[in-house]
Image (tube, rainbow, N blue to C red):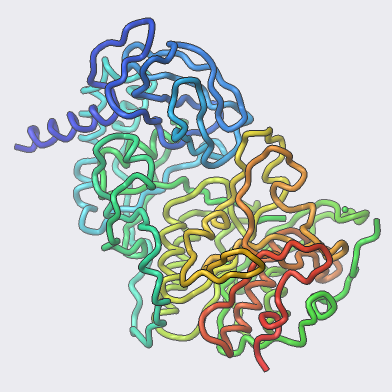
Length: 545
């Protein structure tokens, strides 16, 4: 019975992977199903494939974003194989080649070599995952030995030789359930989210594209999942992530273990002036409140230390080993909302690499706090090019509890060396539209909706306009999502300059905390782009009497 069940499962998977079909003619690829990309994610230098095309030459050129690559027909599978260009931009990039649909995309992984895979497993599926892990991988390797690309077969063989991952609760259940923070009434109308109960898809394209999946109300919380790490041991990370999701469809989801990094020009303006004084001059901040609100700073700092250091140049000032990142973020937020309580949650290491698991765990801890009562704000001055699934799910967890999030928009160096046609991504900031809610408001001939995830760009304190250090500025032809709001992002602390979107985000975190101490809900913060005009309205800057 078990052997029959596995055979049925593998047959379905092989159909998904496009391996079980007739040999293609040498002149063109034969279409057998809608076109798709395998794996869903791949790092520069790794091989990826497009399947399901018809009337396409067996070799030629394609583009990953704005970067060119050559493809060739893999005759065993009928897939078109290509190497991800070394200079490919990170995150979701459009794939273009003559005769292919415009919907094809690849998530280009921007993680260090050797980054492992993080798995989230439904609690009721943990025994199945651990008992069936090796057997399903080995059986799939055997079944596609002749009909899968050789590289895919090799990965399956090496993965099947590993022990199943050890699993542990991602977050401890909340104790002492208190007064629940009521979610905003229209959150349920948002677009459906990929959850731990993702339905089995009918084909690979549908499986890899969340937008194509049928709507389904989430029944599991990411915070109830079990988590574990799968060593990649030199294997292509994108294939590991995709294959594990395929063989445990609906029971297991994956992410890279790295989520991103912290975000970091004549005489400097307002040199060594305290942040509160700078904001009083620029925004007419009269002294915020924040009483009764907790600002959770997910960054490089803990309650006792911040080992991160940074060297660089600010205008004509060169500095070496400038201390802190998260600590500076917290101090700026508290300068805006002096009555707020700060809760530092360290999710990044001394070298600036940030852990996916620690970030998800920290957000789940914030959700626990919110369920017990009180008012809360999250500051995320970290991010990266890849849309990690656990982060998205955990952000949904906190925002549906009424906790707004301020995320840094990303800096210009995120887009370094990109060319026209590349998309410069930065998450979680680029998800801001997915967290909109409520009725549209017409403001200056634009229709705007409030959001629970604010993408904060830096406003130049010297020129009074969008700062040149922002992502996408000075990169003609590079595609970026716009930010949702601007805020001053240049401050001095302890004799050191701190500048960039990392330090604009806590201005918004502080303003949110001040607002929530005396006003309901969250404020509408439009993107003000008129040079010389303050980027945030006075009624938000000074919301409390």
